[in-house]
Image (cartoon, rainbow, N blue to C red; front, side, top):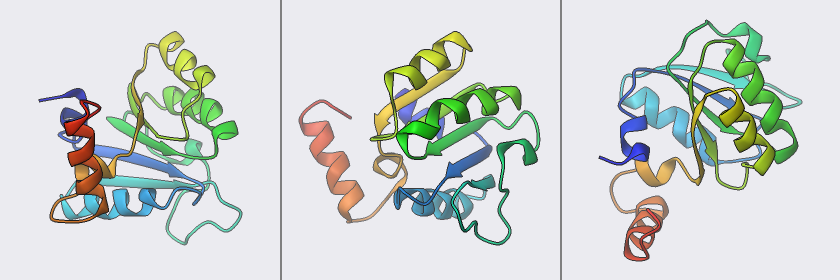
Length: 141
């Protein structure tokens, strides 16, 4: 099992979004369907009802974080997540930066970067599973 596949075997997650990455909504839905404990931090200008509006509002020591933010917000989110005791994170593709990855390393936080979570969560025939098939074909899975 790859690191990307085993990441989803954990039981508790926080998804940090600013609504700039549509896959974050799908990620939340898929995790909920799998009966995972999911907290959502919505850092957008119009946060959804029932979501946390700051990372500081989530419980401590959740197992994993999924970060799907505009690039300039990612590094700060990593620091705040580590303060909450999170040691594993998935930085959505087109969200990762060298600084964010360096910060994860400095904070001794395991991370996956440069990949869409839905490539590993999705099932059936859809754009995400087709993307995963192409990634496997070109050894980028």
